[in-house]
Image 1 (cartoon, rainbow, N blue to C red):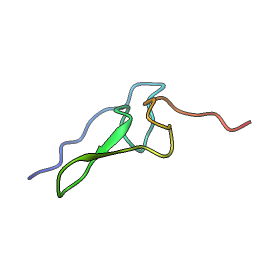
Image 2: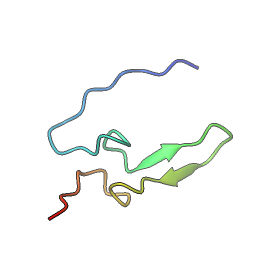
Image 3: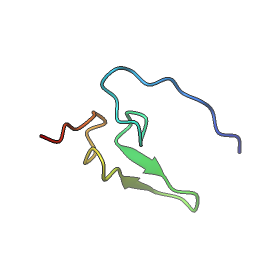
Length: 45
């Protein structure tokens, strides 16, 4: 299975590429810890 490069939109989370989750190799998915599943960049202030 080949990984495809995807372009990020300006507000997308760089870790999950704006999807809000990671697809696991053995099946299923896991919520992105960086954006808490929103798919948007979080600002740490």
